Image (cartoon, rainbow, N blue to C red):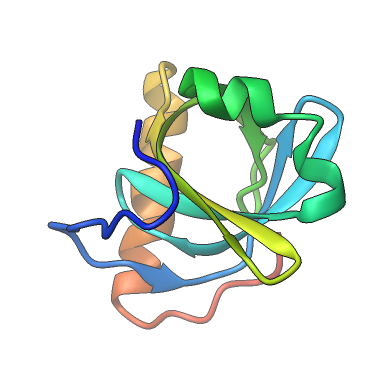
Length: 120
C-alpha cells in the first residue's frame, strides 16, 4: 500500500463515473472507475471508521452497478490521500463471482464507448 503523496501510474483508462460503494456501514461514492480499479471518495469525518482497514490494505465492499444487484468485492488499497475535507482512496477491485465480473466488465465497456448509463 502507498500513502499520501504517491503518484499512481495507471495502465488502463479511467472513466469519471459515480457509483455507490458500501464499505462496512459507510456509503461512499466513486470519483472514477476502470476495469480493475476505482477511486473512492470518503468524507474526512467518516474516514476514521475505515482508517484501520485502509491502512491494512484491504476493504470488503458492495458496489452498486446500474440494473444489477450490488456486487460483492474485495478492494485492495493502492493509495490514499487527503484532499480538502475528503480522503481519496485508490483501490484494485476483485470480484470472485464470474457473473459479477461479467457485469462489471460490461459496465466498463459501456463507459469506454461513451454509452450514457442510468444512475446506480
